[in-house]
Structures are given as C-alpha cells and as structure tokens.
Length: 102
Image 1 (cartoon, one colour):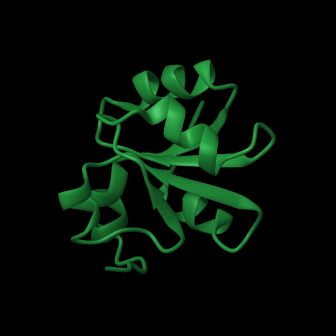
Image 2: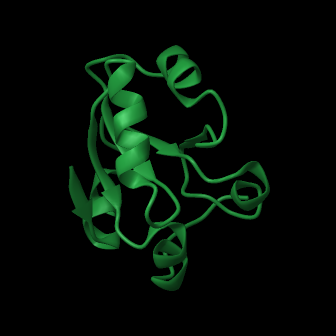
C-alpha cells in the first residue's frame, strides 16, 4: 500500500477514485476531504465498506496515523484493496491548505 503525499492524493480527486475516511464521526464532522465517505475504523468497517464499495474500486484511505495497516487488513477481509493512504492523514491535508468540506 502506497503512502501518498498531499499533492499525489489530491491528483486522484475528480478521477475514478473513492475516498474512505476512517476517523471518528466527531473528527470527520469538523472537516473532511471533498467526496470522502466516513466509516469509522471503530465501527463494523468490513461490513459497511462492502456496502459502499465494489471490489474493483480504486480506494484511497484517510485514517488516523498508525491505523492504515489495520484498516487495510480489515478491508481485505471484505475483498477490498486500498490503492494507498494519505501520509499524515487529514491534519497534513489541512496544513497544506487543500480544500475541505464541513
């Protein structure tokens, strides 16, 4: 799984990629990358993700630092594969001044 810089991650926006944000709802509601879908890692991630995404989707991850591998493993159990994750998570996105939604 590749760690994408903010610039690399941003290049995927508007393309055929889906963005999964696994932060908790309270963090997500304070700001998120446009077009992100929030399914907290603490929820039934495998079950819910399989409802939203197809096995051939290009799937990008926004997670809390250190949770990327665990999330990838959980998604793999549902037959989903991550293309990569945002290095530094949402804080890196914010610090770069990239667009956010609320």
